[in-house]
Structures are given as C-alpha cells and as structure tokens.
Image 1 (tube, rainbow over the protein chains, first blue to last red):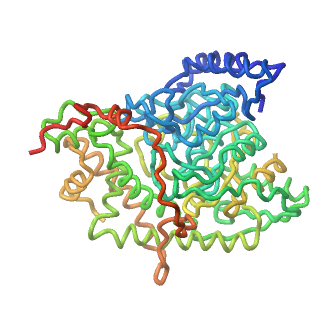
Image 2: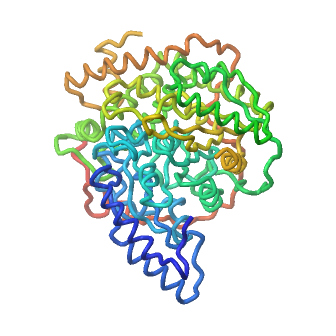
Length: 458
Length: 95
C-alpha cells in the first residue's frame, strides 16, 4: 500500500485518485457519489506529517466504499431508489476504523440494488462496466468497488459478500478479494441483506494489502452481536507443508469454462512444485448449495427489507392515499425487479404450508454442507476452486433470466452457507484478454493463512 | 409446484407490493423458474438432520447493564424520515 509520507504527499495521492475517478466514471460508471471534501482531508494529513504528528497505517490512502456502507459522507443509497436521499447519521464501524488510520474516502461505488445480483446491472443508477471490456459486466454485487481497484483509481475498496459479491467481481476484473470468516468484521452500519451469510471484506491489488486491511478492521464490536473476538493475526506462524485440496465435482462440471479449469490445474502444478501435497476431494452435497442459498437468502432478505415502507427512510411514493397504499406504492416503486423476486420467493418459502418443504429443508441441507466442509478440512488445510464457472459475461446476457444469473454463484455460495473464509485472486487471462480468478477456501479463522498461501501461488 | 394467480396475489400482499397485471405476469414466470430450480433439493435426503439457522458460535454473555451513548440523536433519526412534524414522524391518516 502506497501511503503518504515525507516523499509522497496525501494531496498528490488523492488528486490522482479523483482525476482518474472522473475520467473513468464517463466510460465505466463506477461511482454513485464522489467526495468533494477529499482534498481538504488530504491536506490535513500532509499537515500532520509535516508537523511530525502521528498518522495512521493508511495515511492519505485513497479508498472507496460500496454504497451499502453507512457514512456521514455522502448519501447511502445501496443503489436502490427506495434509499435515495438517505444521509446517514453515523459511520459504519469498518469505515470508522479505516479512517482512524488515515484512509481518505474518494467515493461510493455502484452495486446491484441492495446487493441483489451478480453483475451490477440491477442498480437503479445503471450498470458498471467491466474494467477490461466495456461490453461486459463488472460482476456483482460489489461491481463498482472491484472496477475502482482494477483501474487503479483507489488502492483498496470495501465490499460485502453474501453469496460471492466480493469474489466474483474480483475475479471478473483481475484483483484480489477477501470474504472473511463470518463474524470477523463488524457489520454495524452496513445495509443488511441476508444476516446469516452477510460478511464485509475488501478488494485490493495484493494479498499483503488485504492482510493489512484485515488486521485493521477485524475484531469484536459491541454494536454487532455477531462479531467475533479478534482472532486475526493472533497465530502469525504459517503452516508448513500444507495440503491443498481441489473439488472433483467442480473440475468435472460441464459448466466450467475450459480456460478456468486449465488455470486451476496450472496452480495445482505450481503448488506441487513448491512442495505442497494436492488432494482430490469429493464434496457431492455442494451440488445442492445454490438451491439452499436461494431459499435461505431470500427468506432473510424478505425479513430484512420489510423495514423499507416509506415511513422511516428517505423515499416515500406520492401515489399512496392512505397508510396501506403508502406502504405498497413505496415498495413497488422503490424496489427493482430483482429485489421483488427475492422478497416474494422469501415470503413464499417462509409462508405457512411451504415452510417445512422449503425453508426447513434448506436449513437441514445447510447442516450437511457444513459437515462436508468440516470433513474436508480434516484432510486438507485449504481448498482451491474456481470462483465462478465462467469469466465476465456480456451486459444484458443474463439480466432477464434469474436462474442463469443465480448459477453464477454456484461455486461461491457454499462458502457463505458454512461461514468459512475465502480469498479470490487473479490467475491469468483468457486468450481474449479477460481476467480469470480462483479462490482458496479454508476452515473458520484461517483467513491469514489463506492470504499467505495466495502469495505462494501468485 | 405451479404458481397460480391466487398464490401471486397472496405473495404480493405478504410482500406489500401493488403490482400491475403485466408486472405480476412477468414475476409469476420468474418465480416459477426459480421454484423449479430450488426444488432440486427434493433429491437430497435430510431425514434425521438438524437444521442450521446461523453459523455464529453463539454463547450467552452477560454484560453490565450500562447505557452507552448512541451514534445518532433523535433529531438526526427523525431527519431520515420523508416527513416529520413536532419531533414525530408524520404518516398518512391511519384510521
């Protein structure tokens, strides 16, 4: 991470970031908001450096937040019409920790509204374009953050990963992304999607940068009951002679792009040449993970999004005549089609008569998936898999076909259901120049070890 | 599992949406294809399996009954609402 010091000023770092942000905004549509106060904040850091006052580990580092993070700076919209105009009266704990170390907010990045999607096409403000190919999607839901890092506008950006929303856009744009252990980073002040799988994480240009960001932001927070006591970096030693697993069912999947498969095989060969043992694993229950996820996640979405009713937050439809029609008109106008699909599916699987067949069944299948991972991690230290079956697809290709869009997540959601960490990293390009990404999965609390392993494999 | 118009009306009511007929038809098709996909779970035997609802290692922790200052005060929270009047959120007529 390039931080401001006596030789590099925060102002020059921030000015370069703002210039690039404005330039690429025209072509890629990355930001929902740009911080006009950033230069003043940079001057403040430079003044401290000049006076010899202490500055943090991220002094003057330009960064971006996914627009579902609350902050007093700018409006938090989650790229949804129903939240437009929301000026948050508080900062997310994660934002607070980053800015306490001197990081400077450049802007808020685009996402699929409420993080529902795998392409950033479901944004009320329109899609973000892929960093390498303007005819292709950025991936999602944290598409704007991934592209902001890939185009080197900012040195890092925040994301949230409920089913793959950090790792898939990271791999579509050729950057590093971490989905930490469930509970590693406080989620206080971030718009909730599916509470049993939501985690916060980061995009950066190296595993070492992700390590620094984790060491700054991980830890327990009284404002988030699900945050874990800080475990990150408490065991600094890296395991020697690790065993690396790969999943037979993923490798044999007809949906897997041959170039991704070849990249994965290449990394396994590299691992063996570095002294790792590689082990083929059979994880047959993962085939059901996507179905489990698209029951549990919409159920939690339906509950979490019931609070947006035109009464307490920002947007209220003018079409409502009485209280009931204010609720329903606000929700009908304020949500995107994909939000509506998920809310309705969620209410379906939770409704009387269908609860046992869908929600309860999925909750039981989730146990089987967790058990299968536990068994796998008794044999190996980490598992190498693709992030998604294919590289970035064309804009418009899947947006009207929800199931084909959901299938994007088929290799990323098992991680979220089990609450384990995963790190996505670049693994070359296709012949046509599109980035390829892989991910390394580990048992709970192995986040730091995974980042070390990724460095070995890159 | 077939989605009927009646089911759609029920789901729209549960979700608090007022949908016009074209949107309702489009969503009906979407929901039918999603349900077809998630019904794949029927193949999986889950008898005698305990359900998992959360992956947090939950244990009860007692804390002192102290009051912590909140990040936002009453006025800041009221300012989030589309309309407010005399320190209260203003809503359309309820009765």
